[in-house]
Amino acid sequence: MILSPSTSFSFVAASLIHLDTTTLQCRPAKMTTNIVLETSMGYLTVELYTTHAPKTCTNFTTLVRRGYYDNTIFHRIIPNFMVQGGDPTGSGRGGTSIYGDKFEDEIDPSLKHTGAGILSMANGGPNTNGSQFFITLAPTPWLDGKHTIFGRVKSGMGTVRRLGLVKTGAEDRPEEEIKIAKARIVEEEEQV
Image (cartoon, rainbow, N blue to C red; front, side):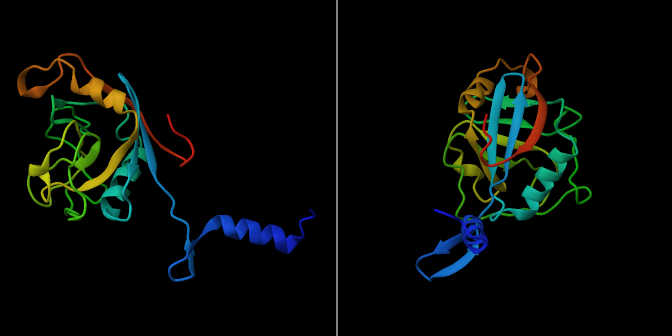
């Protein structure tokens, strides 16, 4: 088969759109934003919910691009609950957003803390999001409506489980530092 310039354009155009067969309309294909967290206990990839929490995802990806999370620690780990990081001071009291100090919640009632691997913003009350985030280790329904869910672990749940098993001391702080060596944005096809 010989491809003409118009055929090859049609092929390229078809790969960039999604045909909605219920309404027979063409719309741009969805692009997924994935972040790889290279931790001292292994790698994990999170998929961001850019449609449900656009401002939160913009904050997170911008901080990742700036290297903000590189060489930070998971400062709080509670077994069967969550793993928390994103504070460059490592104290659990630091961190700011790209919007200044804090920004508002983006609560989507369709998103719930239904199990392990949910990515949410840590906060000190309503509309106090900065840079800190947590990943759930189990269902945590009491957090629904109180914390912005902005993604999920797409791969690397073994790493998440290992994080949840580390020994902790006072204030749920790991006895040994668990680092995020590097956080980086990856293409949809690339997974670790």
